[in-house]
Image (tube, rainbow, N blue to C red; front, side, top):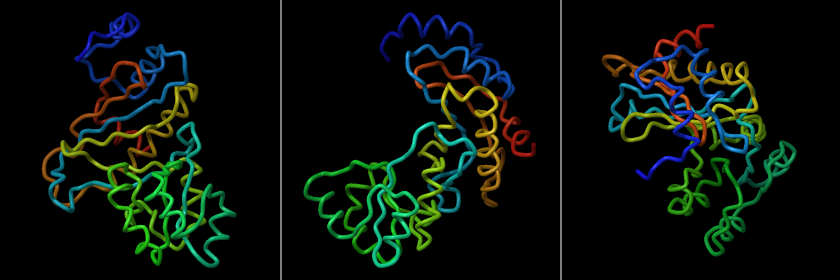
Length: 236
């Protein structure tokens, strides 16, 4: 890893690397230690005691954050018939079928953040797997992006829906707001994530489910959280 900048080293001194902070303390630390001259994202990492190699422990889902993520996603919808109008009325940025798939394949067009598809369009979308898959853009029923209810799917995404999936080490990474949100909105978004993740605990997972958690900003240092804070926030 390259040498950290002076600003980073200065704020890093404000965080005790051996302490597991309460949610209140962690959020305060994260907001205090941001230093970039842009509105940094506040990110959450949760280390789960699961084995992602097992299908029922490969935690994957989505959550609609009460206060959104701080940015509005561009949504592409693959649909036909009456579902085209439904998607457009819900605020989709692009709606179409094979012509959009061809544009992606031939022109490398990727000017969108999320993709929604009706089940009857998956034959078309499936051909884009090698392009959309590695970028995390492939529609999936588990995250509600393969559905006939395209209106709701688009509104949820525009309203702050975030998809998540454990990596090979069993860690979830997702944004829960911006520095400009202030502590209360960040904590409320955190609570929504905590409730969703805890509810998804697989019956086959043995031992401690939440092994660790940390908050950070885009450029700032990580602040460790007491894992018990997820349960407390979810129950609040």
